[in-house]
Amino acid sequence: MKNYTPYAWALLLLAIPFSIGLSLESQPGPASRTTSAAVAGAGSSVLLGGDTIQSQDNGSPRTLRLNPDGGDVKMGAYGVHGPLAYGRVASTGSPVSFSSNITATHRHAVGEYDIHIAGGALPGDVVIVTPSDFFATPQVYIEDGAYHVRMIWFTTDEITNAGFSFVIYRP
Image (cartoon, rainbow, N blue to C red; front, side, top):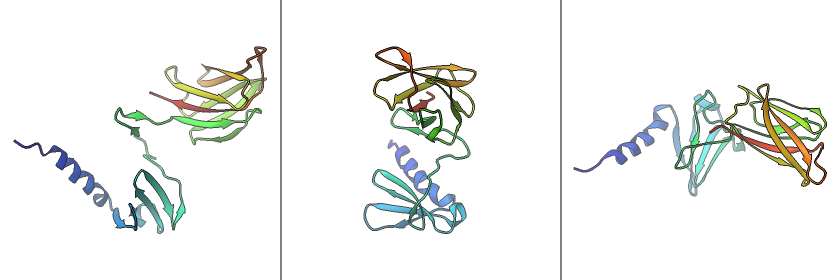
């Protein structure tokens, strides 16, 4: 007996865009465009091509939101979650840029920084901190529901002010 499961999945995946009011337009080259005035606005579209997804509004780049109302986004063969939060913090503790779920960053002492995220920090989170100064070494721990980052000057072991970038994953 022939297994029709792969064919059923292919038909389902092709039917989804049409069942929620989206249509596919043919574009020159290897990409296709999904549009819907009812879903995203009069000139909005999503360009799908090769290995890219680009949200546009009348041809200009637009923020692409995946599951803005909740739900996991998993990637790859093992269903890996994307980053929970990310950003850059200046040596003053001010946020330079960050994901929308960062609620606050600040320096509360020399070389001591706090990162607050919506929902709070959890002990199982994976936090990667990259100092903007080559000679600073980060220490990260959780206290009072926030991530605390301490920057240590690696040649003298003194606490020092240094900006940094961070990515937080929640496995």
